[in-house]
Length: 332
Image 1: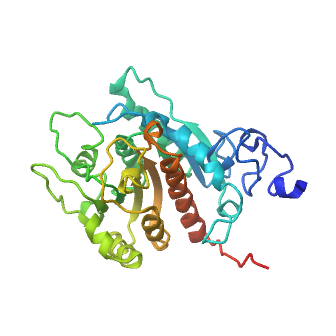
Image 2: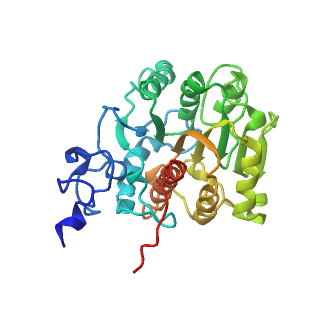
């Protein structure tokens, strides 16, 4: 195959995660080979000229059911290689022609000192935010979103939350323990997110003593009865022009589309539904996003990892569109 096919964005073919010299453009590599980073972006901690840093948080010590999300970042990076070929359908542009995106690697923490993990994740986020670089984070269980929100709220003030999930994750625990079902209760209590400007999409579970906390809830059956455009319109109505954090728990998808997760719940969204909604959120003032709860040991044919990688890529396409990227007809 011609050399220009394999090295469109740079002058060094192969292992672009380490060898590429440019922050923009796409270097096409064999899907089955080469050093793996998210979307083949350059692995670096140098944030000069960077728009968005992708990083992993391989943490799963706060799960209530099946563990394994510590392997999520690795699996999502691997799955993303399937998409790293240039223009993205249906946007019809390559987001990396517009956005300078790097893979910042993983957040390091000592799993044996759990009391320090929250502050460690916050410090990891601050290193990126202090450089005025946006974050896209791959989890890890959903509890990682709490310290990420805390770090972002320090910079931006109370945030709107757009949460795609099967669970609301607002269970109260006044004893101070945090797991992947309690963290948004703390985020609301601490003023990190504004519940009146936040929305939860795809919910299909409940618990004793559940409170709405002022949040808007679109249960899964409601989403199934609505068009993607109607769901997107409701999300935009709730968050308005507030700075917004997007969190996507892969268990928002039905287990038929994402079996590789710790707490699967039947009756969820299809991958098509979720992506169709996300693509319409072009007017929301997003500051960051995460995709969490991929547990590859329970996956089938990598479909959960592929879905998560696609959700993360759609977020980057949203941000590229907001930065001025315009699609073009690529058919001759």
